Length: 129
Image (cartoon, rainbow, N blue to C red):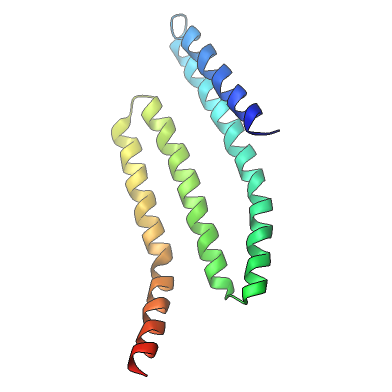
């Protein structure tokens, strides 16, 4: 499958969901959530190729494994947070969707804090030498 397939699934789900709103609105919502979950899990499968490329780059540059793990956590938090936020906003709970986005941003900040501290310590050693 490719982006064309994902776009077709998404477009078909939206069209069917808008047709169902007149009959049974909740069915349209469930259809849209089902299509979203399909696209979500398809996207997660694509991460395998990305992880392999990042591992090759990490091996070539001899980077610490902590940076790779942190990067993957940040990507995961972003992907899941945006997905959940989108579902909340589409169902009419914009406030809850916004709260999920804020929590995702704070989580990324918390995960990346050790990397930022290591960067600052490295800069300090260069500046004091």
